[in-house]
Length: 188
Figure 1 (cartoon, rainbow, N blue to C red):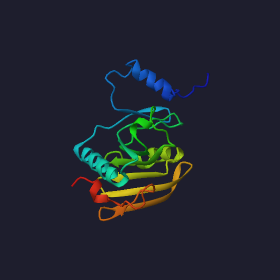
Figure 2 (cartoon, rainbow, N blue to C red):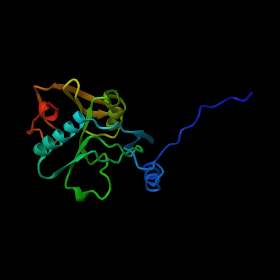
Figure 3 (tube, helix red, strand yellow):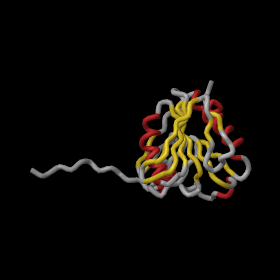
């Protein structure tokens, strides 16, 4: 008998992923993201999640102000064959400064809003953002009404983690004088 091998998976590069989308391989393109060469189907967005995206976008716009772009639900290009679409990313500069999707070196902060995807956001997404060297990763847990702030990427982890409840505020590394209330990010 011959030895059997496990089935192989297809590794998608950012280029092959874009080509497949352009060719219509996915039909009416569902909400997808490319992470470490694998394509993930994104969860449908429920009303509390939508409210949190809207409120967090507004709060980050106020905190960061001129000279920064707040990018809700838009891709960032990672060198690890990834193109995740975080709920919100913050980059320096204006939208026209980016002819391509911003890369990991452009991203100052990533915010994921979690309800049904908490394990994914705390696990694989955190690893991917840490590997990419993204300085600050925030996870807003709608159900627990908390904000977890991860900083100091090292390998696949963040060395610093701090949990804030909805009575507290957190300040972004890039704007330390602009505290953001956790309650201002959450649906009522």
